[in-house]
Length: 136
Image (tube, rainbow, N blue to C red; front, side, top):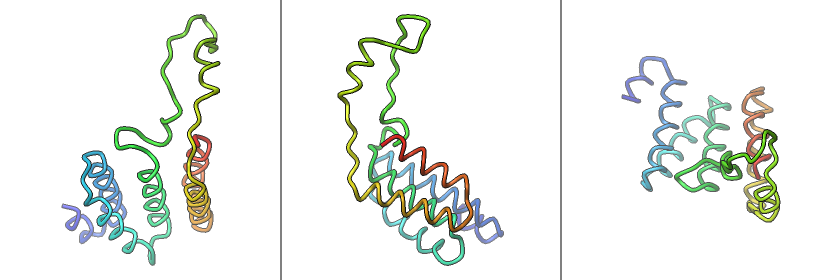
């Protein structure tokens, strides 16, 4: 189906679907995701800088977070409120001790990907990177 979409001139749609397939493969624990993502990066590198940056961002996300969640959700926890305010004495004090230590290489990779989005003029991509960096 992806090949058919690509041959009919909907290259961006085909690449979006390919990225979604990579995410599904990762969620299923299929190692074929690496080859598919590498293929997609090679395809995008020359003629579609935004799609290439999206592939890089996805690659970093998948290397950092487990298959059952997303990097933006790793530092969130659902806690029932004990009052009408957002404070939770028990959780707030415990949360200060939780640390999610991302490797320096991941932080640098996100910054490099931010630059790819900046050069391409993709403000939304730049924002997506900043959200991820805020979660680290």
